[in-house]
Length: 128
Image (tube, rainbow, N blue to C red; front, side, top):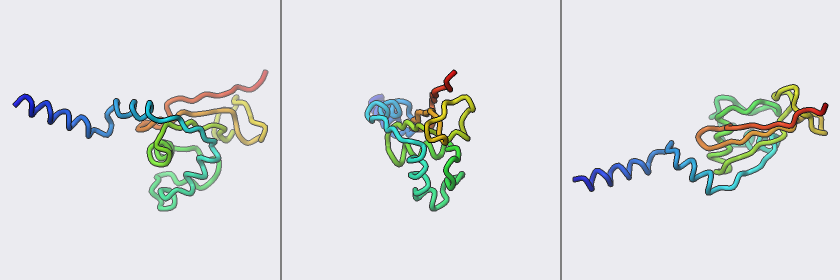
């Protein structure tokens, strides 16, 4: 009887989609994808999820702030690996972030993980 219960509980543990050990394994087993905001925007805008209006917040205009559902789509469905997004539009980031040479984006990045979305961000502050 004890052997049966032990086997049953192991099987249950394997099937849990939100098991932290699965997320850790996912992160260790996959290389991080680095992608610009503009490229991520194009992927999201042209995705079936967006075209079929399955996102709560549709992606339609460059410069929109990505929501958790967009970040998780990139990590869990599109790339199937952790993602680093960089060079965000200046209008959605803090004023003190360093502007890139294009005058539209800032030197900022976010790290996205499965089941969570953004876990950390970083930036380059303005000179002076």
